[in-house]
Length: 255
Image (tube, rainbow, N blue to C red; front, side, top):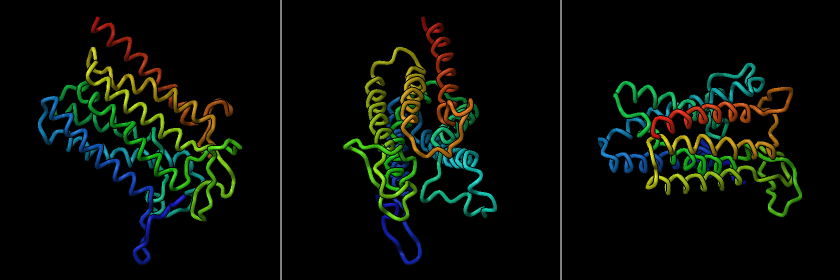
């Protein structure tokens, strides 16, 4: 693909970073619009968005470094924090966002479920841009396949193995991310109780991500239960359990 969009002297502008930045700006803009429609102050989501972005990047990078620590043995701080060409783990970013949201919501005494429901569609919206960046960089690549829609990476800076047809796992996630975004946007007008949107995302995404993990070829991400579960699948199980508890609690409360 195209890991580098263009270079200015010795400074390379990476496709991954540009797509992440673009998705972030659009998500904050959309979240600000929705929060104003919900009756919140116009600056509320901007503040939440800024700190959530910071927490998301830190959480995503920390999780990547944790699961690939052997790659950073002897690395400098600059190498560890460099994310321009990839190296972010979605679940680490999601945990970071939820922690940041929880702290800010608690400090500002905001209604947590209403705020999280505004956030919910923006998470898969961000996935669309993030995984598009992964496709450009070649990270999060799939297993070899002879399917007609396989992708073959040829750029020397691609993270993926070169000249081998691979499952386009990045595209798979873009597609189901877009589907989740569309579903949650539609549901915004049909919710029965606060918290329904975030619980829907936390229920459906782990299922889709776990299925996609079966086709991933970047096997150095860590495994659990003697290789039965990837790092992401193990976290998906935990997220699904939390979502299940949330459904039981809120359905009982709103029955």
